[in-house]
Length: 203
Image (cartoon, rainbow, N blue to C red; front, side, top):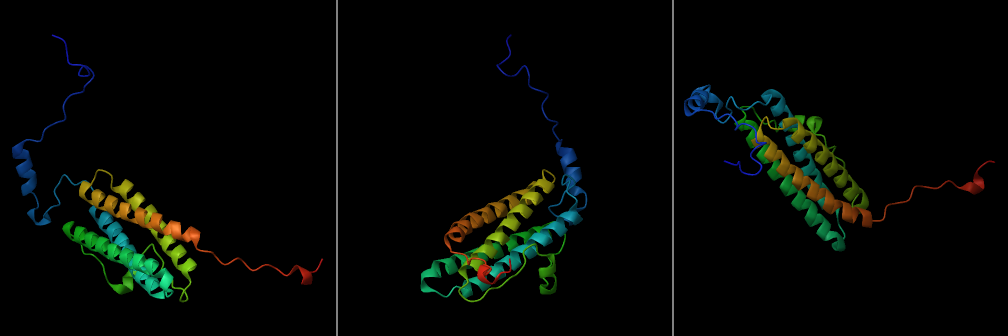
């Protein structure tokens, strides 16, 4: 009898966990809720990482709102509306992170005294109407979070698929923000650096 095409190189099927074993593992440490022995993540380190990301998103959301209020020209109102929308999405992402930290059995740290010290995004303000500075700073913040989330996704790997999917969703949001911010940033004229007066320069 001939084997179906492609089956001759197939390896053995993956091991199947028996129902009794699944039940025994589920009964272990019931107080851990959704965290079962099959979760291989370093939970204290993971909770610390998620709190760093939580603080970064909260600070980024506050910066978005602050910068939106500084955009005063009527022609630039779409930029202000976009920044407010970014703030709302970042706050929504922060709430998802806080909920996941709680599911893992830890506490989300939203103490304002700790947020700026833990955040990877530095809060910076600008004079009213400095659209170039505002857009550039928010693009830098988005790119910092893109890199941080990419590294976090790689670090989590397959140890905690639920957390990895959450981080991947946040990463997609931040990449979209960076893409939208990079277009207007390139269109906004930046002030040229001051040039030295050559007439008064010594030979």
